Length: 138
Image (cartoon, rainbow, N blue to C red; front, top):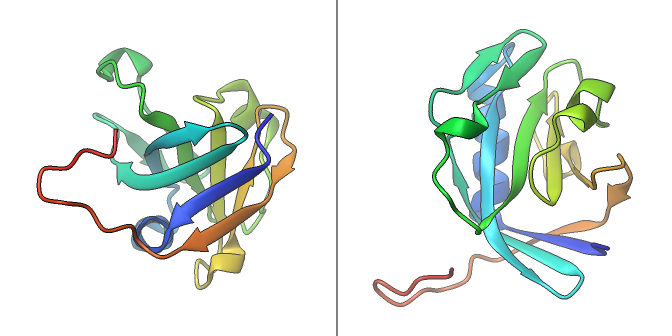
């Protein structure tokens, strides 16, 4: 069971910026990182191939994704302002964590993390971790 999700600052900023740029349509991003014990650290976002973005929905085809065990979950926006997963969100849960950002997409308080049952998971925004050249986090 996941007890904490850590988002690097650049990840949290990318989630908010992507949501603001796509508004009033939903946006969707893959979250890459690492799971250690009961915590998940997210260091990168990836735009899914052939993602669709619309008013009230966003999605991607799982079949278009390469095998990547560093994908911890998905982030998507709720232009409606609802900072909780819908039934549709839970039925299409992908990975180990779902991050939702809600309108107005202006602060880290507009971001929340959830498990596959829709229960809120505490999260924190941490400074970006320095990486050596060509050093892979994964």
